[in-house]
Length: 192
Ligand SMILES: [Zn+2]
View (cartoon, protein in one colour):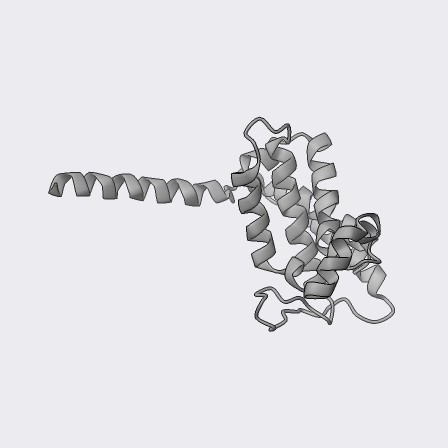
């Protein structure tokens, strides 16, 4: 997919994530933080290609990655996404001036890139280092660019018409997990 396609698709995904209130930070986030975050991350996976927008700017990163993993290799996998989130949360100093809504928007941007590339016939190695490629090839042929824009527009329209106040929050799941943990702790105390 082109850089333009990724940028449009990422903003559409952010609007959808905002409407679905995926995380409180995205639901109440500042668009001045979230837009740069989503746009930047939507181009990030293609840093593995020296001719891509970010690859041209950071050739000292893109050339070694391209040589090591090839285009649409490691950076287009769940492993890269998970490693990125983990590194950010563990290695960044607590007083680092990166707002959480910017960071959450970056995750949306990165995921939107992976999904968008999955819509092309080449697909992506989601489970890298396994070579298996995942694709739902609906973006092909000459009309590809029009189709990219149409899908982005469709996502925004869906986002606008989504009923409000439905809790899609991932946090609900984590809350449930922590409640279960409290129960387990209580049970363990009873037996001790
Ligand atoms: Zn890509």
